[in-house]
Length: 78
Image (cartoon, rainbow, N blue to C red; front, top):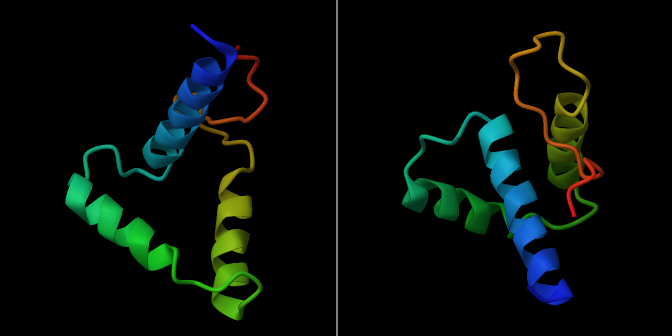
């Protein structure tokens, strides 16, 4: 596997982990894609963008529930 393919696979793995962490692993794929397309219309720097970032940042905090899935960008996967 080339370095570029490994990087691409890792990015997809991390993005999939975000879907799981958000509790959307059982959601309809069309629903997920529609939501992502809507999110793509939010202007960076807007109040809505900041509001959504704040939610995401708060969600990244360590969970007290050990069974809770955890996605970390520096998890050591290579």
